[in-house]
Image (cartoon, rainbow, N blue to C red; front, side, top):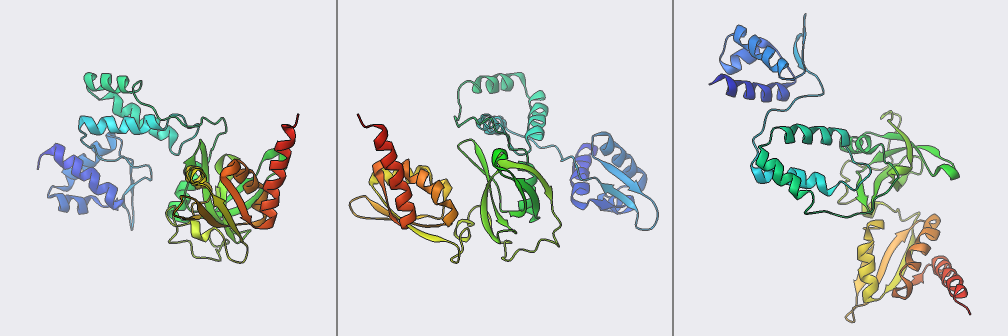
Length: 321
């Protein structure tokens, strides 16, 4: 095996093992311990964060911030990476934002000049417009890592003018919509699932996992199936809304608010939306269905129906001559 190929495979091996001895690697690669020591020194010079530990149980270790082995890309694969990054440029906050920029700078630096030219031209030929929000969402990376590793997070949450409060949550994931980032999570204080807007999180730190024991199993939940778990039958209020065909389109455009809502369509193109909400959310959903105008009619509960009716009456009063 040539030296260059051996170094690449060695880099992959140490990243996979994380802890090893020179003798183990020398036997695996069929070289002397002296040659393996030289190879490890070269890897260290290439940026692989290695450190040695002497004594019983010693050996080499790889630090958490590992360097990955080099990968070959086609031109179209290179275009796709910059395309994906460019598509997200209107968001004021992104997870791994600094790392993504650093990676693209490194990648761009070693591209052929003609490929660089095409990428530069592409920036002005395609775009994905979304709402540009001034609010920063500063804890996206922590929330995402916590959801992957199933670790609880203690946050300070709320709108500053209304006061904030501390609570511990188990993030399910994060998603973006209309320029805002959201985090569905299990709330240990409410003992129920809640949806948090990340820009309203003032601080976030990993919590003590043993002190925070969820009353429900969250191990199998992710962004594809968390919706039905959002409301418990004990807390929720059943909602029914009659939608016109246009109203169904509007609901689909805004269904991120409650992806668990279900529309039963009729032959004439209209439909009935059925869902559950918390009683405390009636003012929010009154604004939501008011925005539909005549395309949505709340059938139940009466509290929500009356809240929408009140808004409609006030709007009509503004148009009186």
